[in-house]
Image 1 (cartoon, rainbow, N blue to C red):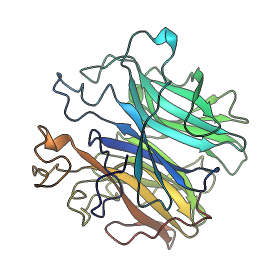
Image 2: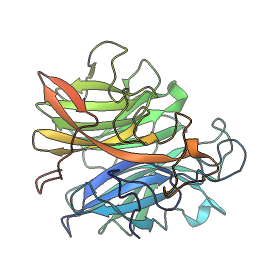
Image 3: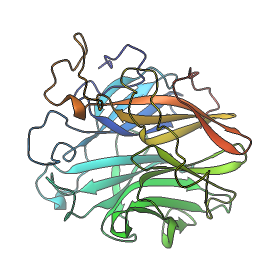
Amino acid sequence: MPDPSGDGLPYRDPVTGGATDPTVIRDRATGGWVMFATQRRPADDGPGVTWIHGSRIAVATSPDGLAWTYEGVLDGLDRPGDGPGPHTHWAPEVIWDGERYRMYLTWIAGVPDRWPGFARVIREYRSDDLRTWAYVRDLDLSSDRVIDACVARCPDGRWRLWWKDEADDSTTWAAVSDDLGAWRVEGRAIGGRPHEGPNVFELGGWWWMLVDEWRGMGVFRSRDAVAWERQGGPDEVILAEPGVHPEDRAIGNHGDVVVDGDRGVLYYFTAAFADGGAPPAGHPFAGHPFPDRLCAIHAAEVRVVDDRLVCLRGGAVAPLSSNAR
């Protein structure tokens, strides 16, 4: 099913208009790109935040990382012992471990109508084709309020997993593993202002972590992906200033970076009509009952200039090359 945006917007979920929390990975079988995103349900008229829960994981594909085609949602992410659904699937992280793909998914039982009082767990799955996923385990981490996994192999040769711990004032924690088997919790990696959605990547001689502070993204850098320092002062963020697309006029939220040579491409989402506007006539979601809930996914280049990460929001984004990772 094609994505109906066709207006310079990298991706808009054609079914619900609620695509958030993107992660992008190369399909090693085709050479193309696959995006996984939380599929919120903006039109749901249930109480509280039911429209954010009960979400599925949507899949889209692209030959170049810019033009995306919606392929549907992932099935089989719940276990028989989970009880009757629907359940909530959030913020997938997908990596290649050298032999197969792994997904680290935030899973919540049912469709909560409020934030507090409901456990969140990070689940691991494996796949050979990015389409069919087999459950591996629920990870035992720092609390039962963990979301937004990110996984990378670090300079010491070991793997690290970062996540948001809502039980620790919404800070980022880390665990380490030699082989993606047993994980040992190392503790808090990033404290300070509450945040979510850690994303870690290597670019320009540094390791970088972006965190969503709900006012833009805080930027941290490291030589070893273990000890982190903030770029600039406590108030410095990227993606705070609007872009140029009509649906990129709010702060940028929860993103993922694909590294391509000396640049990265940052995929992030916005509340498309957070300014109180509404989709115009001819828009796929014109007349939507809750336009302020609609979201869109955008792309921006990031580069390292004088040891600082710079985001070129609103600028032209070149297609991903065959060497991107």
